[in-house]
Image 1 (cartoon, one colour):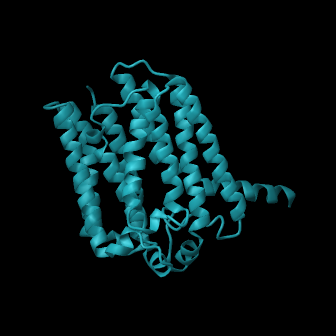
Image 2: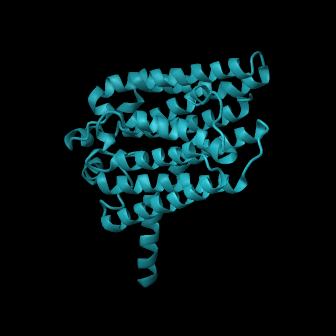
Length: 310
């Protein structure tokens, strides 16, 4: 019994950390480092590794805060059906972990990320680099924590697009080089759009619980029909921006067009599945689309790594 009792909290903690979902920030951060390398810059391995760990810790802290602050919605999601991509992990709601301990772990993660940020600053003494880290940390706090709680104000999805799309790519490049990447407003767009869609689609199974508990996120404000149209439009724009990046950075290169096409085709297929096939209408069908949307996000990051050269 003692061994089993030990294993259960460990498993609950590993579940609450949502480790697979940290990849949506860690992968683009790594692509940012890679872009710096392939574009001929001298790379700081120490700062890059410290930045990778800091990004991971900020993701973990954000997820842990959500486990505590989303208990009302998460408990109701059980009654209407949930997917691995929605409704939280239920580690706190299910009584597997104490809310106080989870919040303590979140603050410790923030503190560790801050120390790593100071270490990076000692390597690259650039105030804007510290500003990027502070913006990421503050966003992670304000996204879920009352009274601000941006997740219920209709702007959380856009904030996620910035913080998981633009920010990690730029921060990865910055940690590696101490410099800002040129044209980040352009090459980050497919990642911004695809991660926005990840969050928007994950809200569909939680629509009724969110609405009943006053969590007025973007989907609750729009309704599911209009939300599906927004998702399809963002998917279409993801495909278009990938093609624009190919034309801008590697015009007329058939090899690089082949690199871009998987993301383009997947984005168009997902737009069709959500808008016309209405795969959002059932938890049985939406789960696969949620997973494919995360795949599109990763493909977009990797495609950028293969295209962007200055």
